[in-house]
Amino acid sequence: MASAPGVRSLAIPGESGPETPDSSSMEDGIADGFSDLATLPVEDGEKRPTCSRCRRPQKVCLCPFLPPQPLEVSTCLYVVQHPAEESRVLRTVPLLAACLPQGKCNVIVGRKFSEEKHPELAAVCRDSRTLILYPGPKSQNLEELLQHQAIGTINHNVIIIDGTWSQAKNMFLQNSLFHLPKQVQLNRTLSSSQYVIRTQPSNICLSTLECAAVALSILEQNDTIQEVLLRPLKALCSFQLQHGAQIHHSKEHLLRNGMYEKPMPKNKRKIKRMEKLVSDHNICPR
Image 1 (cartoon, rainbow, N blue to C red):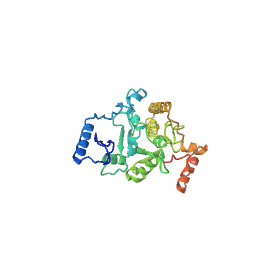
Image 2 (image 1 turned 120 degrees about the vertical axis):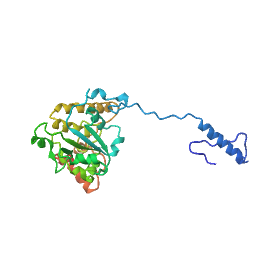
Image 3 (image 1 turned 60 degrees about the vertical axis):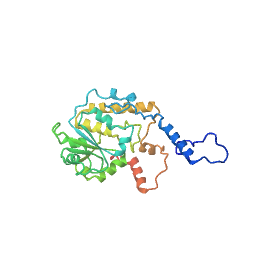
């Protein structure tokens, strides 16, 4: 008789030679064996205690780097998040939400969003005050857009797509709701992404938290917001680097400096996309 997975074969004491034990003895032995296994204590897998504010394990809590009180902002963020981001350990959206008042950073998870299944998001997309932060030929510079508006007269909604660059591109193209708001991009960005523990396509690409930080500082006319929001991100990266993480240069940096070690793609479209990383500085590719 073959052993059950994880269970040793049961031998009958006192038996020798080729004689086969009777079936009743064998069944009794198996029953006794499983009975013994059933009495063994079961260890529950214990999860590490997690901080309720920053969503980090308590041993590496980042709350000391968060603002004592949520930042007062008039802008309302809507982060549409690809489901794969939920399982990532080093996410920036929980840090962003922890810095803002309740209701000012709304996270909606999914790939496809319809008016029937997401009526609240659809209403936001149809609101004339809503902007979607996504670079492209039709995007308007956010700062230029605000020059034609009186400061403080409009409380904007801003939609940000959270995912890898390819995921964000697919989500934007596949959801007609995201084509309703005015499309804007950031021409005033950081010198480079502070999220150095995750690879970006190019030097001008930013994480979700960084995009939100720059956009909010522009919309709220307050550069301090950017500094406050980036503080926990810098602390997160610093901690990870101190504990063995490596700095991840952008693909653009690796290509420009002959450091790209992966085989070059054979697909012409992918080759052109990589060439664009090196030559195009006007649009952050998604």
